Image (cartoon, rainbow, N blue to C red; front, side, top):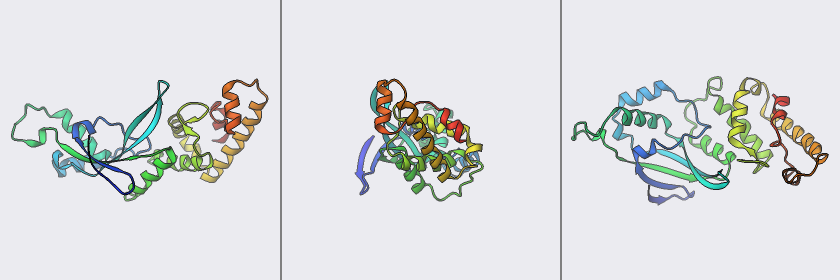
Length: 233
């Protein structure tokens, strides 16, 4: 990646390989891929013209006990799906004069964010054109509840205990999407607070292991187990 410019909001504009771009993971809170949209893009333009407008986020995550920087695609996944298919079905031995079969540079904007709430806010800000079909897109429903949870429990969605794993929490909420939709966001947060207070009281009665002491100190116990979620939805 080659840094080209730093924007006023701290985002960085890079030039990078289109092939390398297709290997970056898609953020888990994204909309579902719309195959019809992918098909329309593929039929309306050549791959090498899909060379700008991509957005990535970068955030710190724990991996094997170490803090590492991870990058995710947060905007442009349909165009990337076209690029992936293109690179998978074409070979560099094709017509040398056909520039569409070669790798090429694309422009990507990357923004560094601290937590899941900030990622969701950023996603909402840049993806407000297509109407949201909540019945069809559970990820977007879950985003609303995660954002509210993050406001009530700031800094508590991270990776490992005593924090609540944001990825595992997202997966758990997605599995319970039918029950979750019956709760308003406010009711969900209120019930989370009740369950957290209940678990803090329970932990205070237990033998003081290091992890328990840390949870009590943080006044946050929802990472102790996942049974509390069953009591909510």
